[in-house]
Length: 409
Image (cartoon, rainbow, N blue to C red):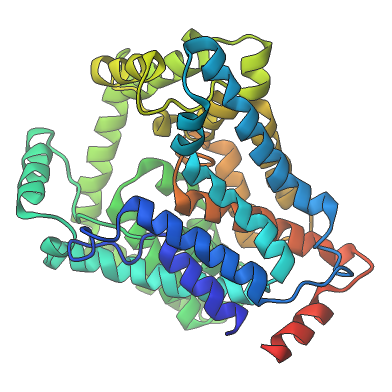
């Protein structure tokens, strides 16, 4: 088995690309998590490790282990404050243990091409899944769920279309990769792919994602270096004019929704920021270790559920700011450190720089340690790739080891 195949299978499992109405009864969230972690164990023992490789050392490995140690220590906080069981907390945060794929990656040293190959396939599967949800939503949802969703959209005058976007993060990363090519000498394929995935992201209508991707795409289209630049721009403008009425409807809906929410003091995101970052405990321990994850029972859970029902507060609404609430300053410091490193290190390619800018500028959308298996694997890949590219400055060439192990497998 090649590393390319290994990473692809990992992403399919972790990003939920097998989830649909036909697999829902047996491929539950817990089953997917167990399968993903077992696949990590397979990779750890299947691929040989090299102690001389500059990436597989204590400095890099310690990042994941420090984050896990913080997660384990944070279990003491809800135990002390609310009497929540340590065992219950341990299992409640289990999906975050997927960050341990970082040591797996550092051991087996997949190349950037292995990741990009897998991201590309997952991105196309995600796009295909979204298209399927447009014409055959029953593939993902029950008729009752579809009816309820349509009624909700009608009641809220929503312009949302589509019912599922499996593996959506892979499509975003692939768009960033293709957008990076626009700034140089893109091929027709590069331009078409970048445009297709940009349109996909617009159709999904997540404002934070559009704000984080559209500027890079537009600047790339204007600055691309090709003799057929004006032809491409003209074709893009013609296509844009053709779908302008529809895009204008989406734009107006998003702007109106944003204005209403920003003016609403009870907007759930304001409520979430207030509750998790202001009203909850902010003593030294909470800053250092966070407040911990609430479990399946107890006063802590009751308090959080009451806030959700009465105020609409969900920690996922505040992205990695919610990570700070859960686990304190240390994991967030790692995230910001590597994001800044990605932006300033000239060895790191454009697509990771764009992703790093998105993390820093729009923190409320990124599910770092937000209790999802896919999120854990995604950020393990993010940290690894930044380490991988910056390791080009190290004395030991990681590519020599890659060629050796790839030839054996």
